[in-house]
Image 1 (cartoon, rainbow, N blue to C red):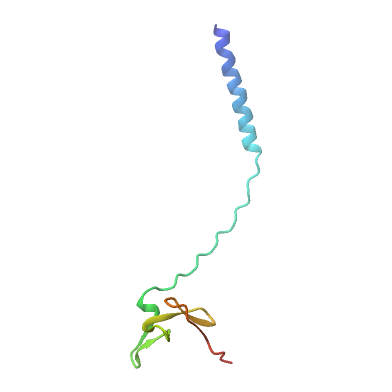
Image 2: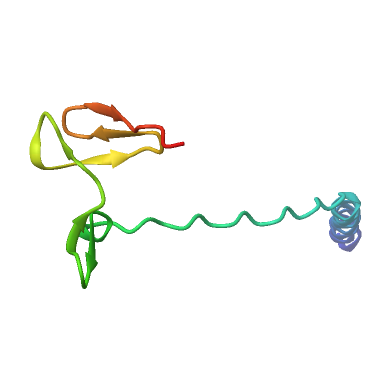
Length: 95
């Protein structure tokens, strides 16, 4: 009976050695450079108004022509868009 008890231990040692060899043979992947985080835009009233000592309060974005005062239009580079009604106004080309 003592011989039977030794056989499983020998098999386990062989299996663990094979597993260790298989793990060691895998090539490591080259590390990718981390992407830079985008700068977040300010939210709230700070993005809609600018305060100057001389001029006072100035609006940075226009109001929607359909919805009226209180509905600011979003700035999309070459156009302004209302999020409430979907109205779009294209910016004038300044050359």
